[in-house]
Length: 94
Image (cartoon, rainbow, N blue to C red; front, side, top):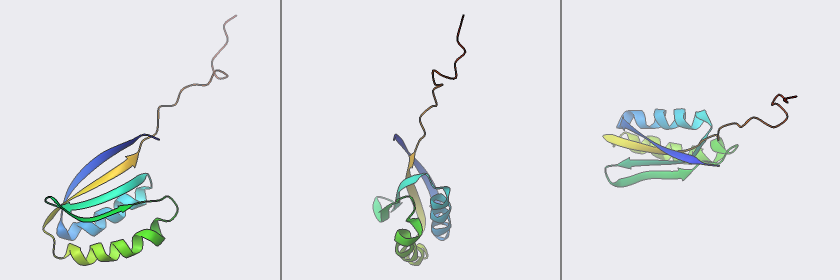
């Protein structure tokens, strides 16, 4: 499935809330949190196990967020390909 990358700039205290919001959307495959050129957190997101696998990372990220000033959150999203009409749904010409 094709993917795209998006970038968000947030302040340190907003990092955890924004990451939780992004994860809740459900079509996210990968999350990277950076402060300048330094990677603060990076984790893949697997559908169905977000809560179990992401919980320890979110705790660590919440602790670090108090020390961060401005951060960049980069996310990889799955994009849905355009829907093509099936041959059955097309009207037949007589």
